[in-house]
Image (tube, rainbow over all chains, first blue to last red; front, side):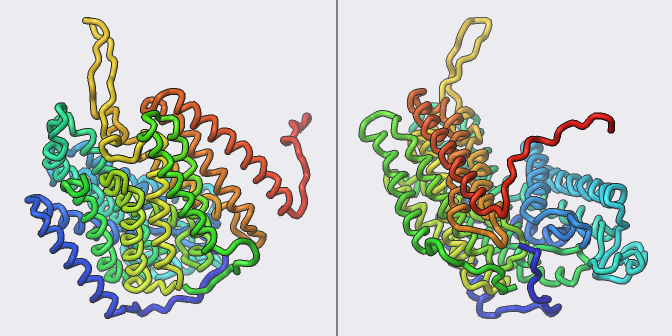
Amino acid sequence: MSAIAGPKSSLSVEYNAVAIIVSLIILVLIIAATFMLGIPMALSALIGIIVGGVLIGFGVHFVPVGGAPAAMGQAPGIATGVAMLAGGAGLAGLFGGAWAASQGLVVATVTGAIGGGLMMAITCFFVNVIYVFGMGVPAASGKVKKDPITGDTQPEFKSQGTEGHGLPFVSFVGGVIGGIFGGGGGTLVYMMLLGLYTATLPKLMGSQSVANSVAILPIAVSLAGVFAIGIFLVNAVLAAYNITGTIEGPHDPKFKRFPRDIIASAVASGLCGFVAILIATSIGM
Amino acid sequence: MTVKVEVVEGGVPHSKVMIVGLILTIVCIYLTYLNVLTKTELFSFFGGLAAVAALTWGSSTIKVLCSYGIGTGVPSAGMVSFGSGVIAMLFATKFGILSPIVAVVLAAVIGAILGYVANRVIAMKIPVMVKSLTELAMVGSLTLMGFTALITGSFNFSALIAPNTVLTITSAGLTATTSYLTSYIGGALIATVFLLGAIAVQHPFNACLGPNWTQDRMLMLAVECGFISMIVASLMSMPFVRIDAAIISLIVSIIGWYYTYAKYFELSKRDAAAWLDLSPIPEQEGH
């Protein structure tokens, strides 16, 4: 859908005060409702899910998402959409974190962050290899005159009629940072739900004879994993909406929009997390 | 980003597709309840038909939403649809016979709040955003519930986590153990179904968009995508339902897929500017 460009978005970030207040009220109501459930771990799990969701949404803003123009060498960034890119980094992180789940929350989250960052580093590296040696375009940013990290000048490498191409160093670094935030956030959501489910599901399924915390583990792992993927994708797409599809990295003016997404991500992950926590209650059964 | 780049012209209005899709989906999911009433599993295939109906409705919704330049690509709509849908669906399965209704209501609430947040806090300012994300969340949850009913023969949480018997050969002979690892959720089959649906719902509009978009061709492709996902889901249902029920699902899905694929091919020929039946590029000698 990006063949026909919309009007140039203005650089100033627009905030809708009423909507932000309404969202924060919804968030407070969700937290209060979770507290009222009376499950000891529920509130801390919800807070963890919200923090994880916000990390995911914030991380997406660092990732150089190029979209279709990047595939044609007309804009900098990785040539695919946020959903695929964040999904890849997040799931790589989630798998890494899930391997380390038995070692505790901190180790698992850090492992997940490293997994996501590693995945993005490999992606960015090979994207640049293909841009430079395959398409024959140098890495040049269209949004800044100088690379904020290396200080390399950009405009003389930029082809006319394009917004830049390839992945400049700052975009590469942004991609890795984004992967670290995304992978860590996704793993945090997973670990919170896993802890809650392993504690509550055996009691919930107590009528069945094989229900004990070891036998129940596949159910808890799978439920937590599916919910983590769901919450991850919702947050990634909301962040994608916030950057209207493409961003060059942390130096892009669109990066300044991230406060909006933090509020949106907090509400979205709070809502999804609340419903995920309700599974662990006796409601409905 | 509120420029509408394409105009809906001709064809069935989206509201009609939505109402027909919603009713068909709910009715088909409830028809799988005949399994419980007649104590068989032969009616599981209605779950797949429910998913097909929901996916068709979903692709029409994606057309409405993505006609506005949202800038994030069409696949993101499929991902947000199932990301919010899976959460609503899994919780709704705990409500027994009321599950499909609860799934619709809960998904609508989640989708509406997500739409509000996206439209106002993130300032997308797309007129159909709230309505579309609400519909997409409902589509996601109902598709997952349909495929779940197809695979396990039921849409109850207890059936989703019901352990299967595993036969293992040890030195002492053949031993049978029950393990949650072989249940629908424990075996993470739901993750496969998640992506089967998420790709099927976004692909039709992604493939058919453009100046010569026609509604009947896109919806036919959506039905085809639904049936091809249903083929995979029918194969996945073999360990969970009786083999005759699984084979009925497989036959229904293959017939449905073949018919809609042939139809889609015809419609593509109709909409093409020119059609040349070309064999693969011949290997030329001497080059």
